[in-house]
Image 1 (spheres, rainbow, N blue to C red):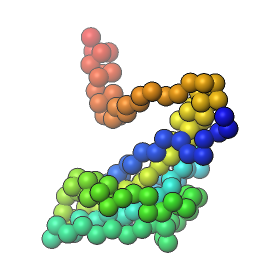
Image 2 (cartoon, rainbow, N blue to C red; image 1 turned 90 degrees about the vertical axis):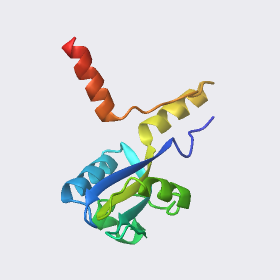
Image 3 (tube, one colour; image 1 turned 90 degrees about the horizontal axis):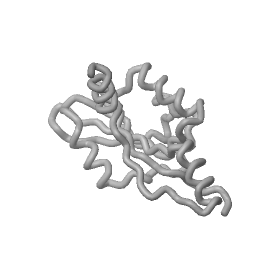
Image 4 (spheres, helix red, strand yellow; image 1 turned 180 degrees about the vertical axis):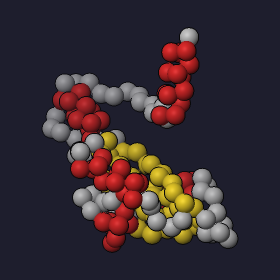
Length: 142
């Protein structure tokens, strides 16, 4: 079997105050893309106004302002309306977020290698970093 065209995709909501990401947020996303850790295949700016309304903007046309100038946003529109509604529930009034659809490139390589060897990933579960760090601290504390 040849390499899979796409690997696992994850939707990540990156929140911030106001209507535009902080330069640190932009740099963090830019670094992950440049390092080849992820490929951003769709991105939206989601804002909850002070009145509670949700507004969205496709990042495709202003990708450099959001740290995505190196991103391949060919699949813009991949995040469905249901995804946007679900993630927008997390936003407080007056806050915004980038909803990133990221392809996990390390996982694509793993899935391709397993598939070419007759294997497959049967299950996967992501544990949020704060949870991992809390558990590790508890284990280390004895």
